[in-house]
Length: 100
Image 1: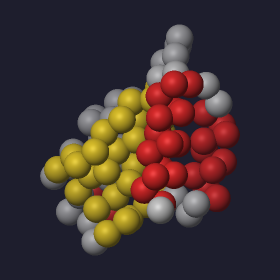
Image 2 (image 1 turned 60 degrees about the vertical axis):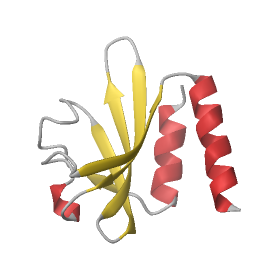
Image 3 (image 1 turned 120 degrees about the vertical axis):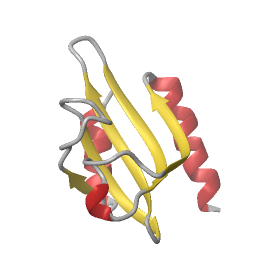
């Protein structure tokens, strides 16, 4: 999968890279977050394993922006694990539909 392409798109869409200092996302995870409503965040978490690259997309409620990467979310409202091209295709389709 083209993880670098996704990271470039996230930076272009004003996502902020968040330090992963907690244990909820796992060691070595890279987190990009954007507030979409008060204390509701769209997160992309890139988990790197020796054999695969797994990207997780989620919408979650945190008590504040600084809690991301240090604490578990108070509530998860949407979650998608993107492991292959088909998953990414469905997610892109979802984003296009939600923009209308």
